[in-house]
Image (cartoon, rainbow, N blue to C red; front, side, top):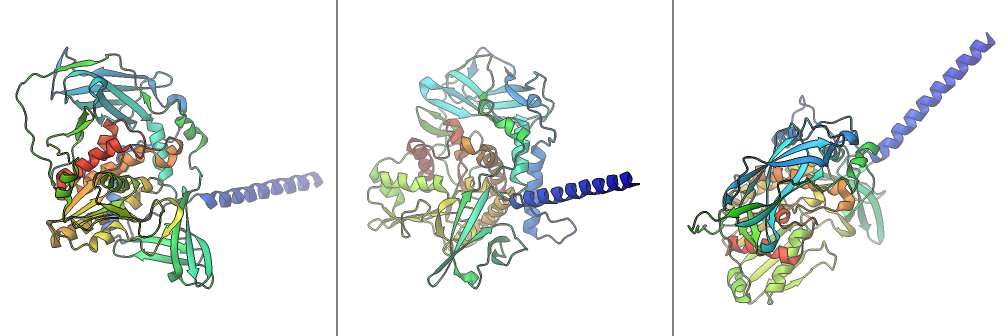
Length: 527
């Protein structure tokens, strides 16, 4: 009896310890991981929320669902194969070359599902020529890459496996499962008192909060309310990486530097392209309203040639002055768009650029030429926006709100770009902002159809040390969404995603030699 009682007590003690350990781990787990709120179908959803959910569902369908991640069963670039569909001895300029990619894992077993993140380009180094290829995924481990042969000569085909489908699934799940990659800090000032509190996009109902809401656009931001200080005292904000990871140990093994961004072996070598026609094709000048194409053009002799239209280069000071005279140019976006205003300053010597609010890299920039009545203004696209230094909160407005404040005119130009700063956040934030921008542009065109609007897509580069939060796969998803939402608007596109891929730029901020091509596209649209 005594032994039975002791055994029962010991068993009960073990159970209690296990329960306490479980509860402790759950509590610890919840400190750093947050679940994105989901609205159930039974609830009354707004039209905007329905649109957001629709785009999320569309992206969900192209991302593979892989729960059991084993590296040896993941896609291996070295074991995969490239072959040409219907190969020829020679091709003509303008032909479409189709290259088939068959994927294999590390065990040399053929993959039976798709979802790998590939980038492809053709190039001729002797001509400084290059162009992107369009990837077609058959969802069974086979892909077709469609290349337009824009120039003659020997052409090299390159296909890179950036992330295996298993890695894509892990990145997608991690991004949309929490808000924990970025920590936001808000500064409240009340007379001489300065208080810092935690802020973010997620509501923490366990604390008293300050809510900063845009009810029309259904965008919300929260800060923990400082004791005895008004929410109206919120003045500055900063965001920084938490250096936390949502990936499991098995998932992280897929992102070893030796296994990502690898070129798939090319057994067929170079292909020969000749000019089969002496007819000179004169493309019309690129203009606003043309569709977003992929590939959108090619480089040759370090010059960009759009697909289906022609670009005008404005390099001399006189040409730029004539083009820009009397124009009001608003640049709303991130630091890749900020590069434009510095490019313009280097070419337009009479343009005086200054920062009204200080020297921080994310501070607003204003360029003025009083003689020619030129104004160029760059302003960050507001949160989410990552900056280690504090930035003004009270003067921040989202791009839709900025557009609403512009009356518009035939000499008004608005350039928009968002993406990189959204990569560490759940995708629904990006989708909502893009839809709200689309709605704001529709309102703008009602009151001012002559206003010129240019959309610059995201650069295809990434930070290789921050693959989990800054992967170019996230940028590719943004590209697909932006393409769908803006396709029916009367806007011009600078397809920076395609251009940087062709330029073989794997960094977020390409050199000014590349940026000049983006600015040339801008000038072609507005001059």
